[in-house]
Image (cartoon, rainbow, N blue to C red; front, side, top):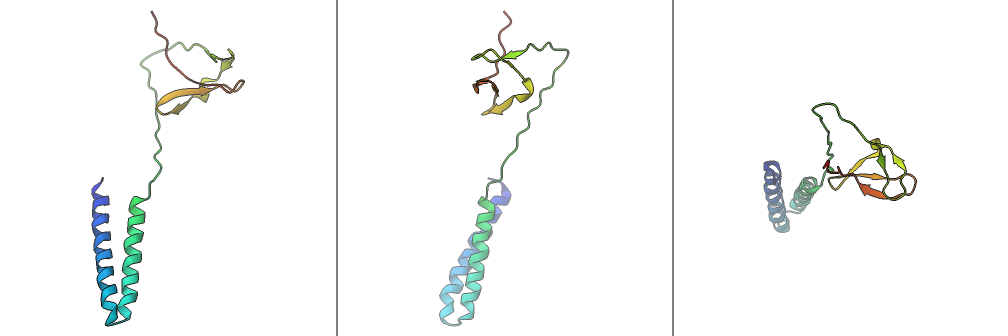
Length: 113
């Protein structure tokens, strides 16, 4: 939890606390009920804004130290040649979906020995 979220929770708690106090005090002055409603709305709006999850975009780049020799990637299910540019990262693992048979498989590097 970041410092901004902690400060937001503290401010929201203070606003909601004063909202309850003003609601109780509205028996003496009905205008305090309007103030209480305003404090509740602002407090809950702040809570909603803090808890709203923002999508995270992860970009992975591959840097190679020298020349590489790329062998054609073939589907293990039907043997069709696949485009390496169609590789997608799914749960941290590079995967390719065959456009011919629809089989999705993980791209792994075979050992050289």
